Amino acid sequence: MARTPVPGTRDTILTAAAGLFYRYGVRAVGMAQVVEVAGCGKNLLYRHFPSKAELAAAYLRLVRREREQAAAEAMRWAHGPAGQLIALVSEIAENTRRPGWRGCAFRNYLTEFPGADDEPARVARGYLADSRALVDRLVAELGGDDLLADRVWLIVDGLHSGRPEQAQVAVDWVTELVKGCAARHG
Image (cartoon, rainbow, N blue to C red; front, side, top):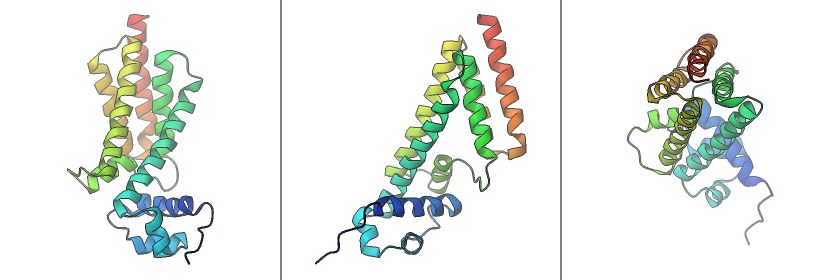
């Protein structure tokens, strides 16, 4: 007779996998490592996540929820689209300064698996497309054009791959760009 899983087992496995995937990369982490760190059996792991791709997709969905919550909280008290853009980029910049920062989980996955069309890649591309759409919407509300949206997005991309000491430069640059646009259209 099969044992009844302990409540929270799925979350324990996902948390263990998320830490490993972010630190070492999805390709480098084997399911045996996840079993060891999660402290569960192989059968239990595969009951919750029948494949590594399903586990990687769950990891990226978890990171997406965390990133969306952080962005929403950062923009919550900002005034208008200019303030929201600055708050969004400031939150990303602050994120790059945290200990253990290894870049954007979504960009990392797509770099590890270029051209992939599996569920994790779709989750990663979906998050990036939605993030870009948010920047585009805020820039449009500000009265900016596609060129301004491209510039802000390139700065965001640079934050994810640059050095943490340069994060403030990115925030200052976006602030300059959006305040200049707001002054022209305000």
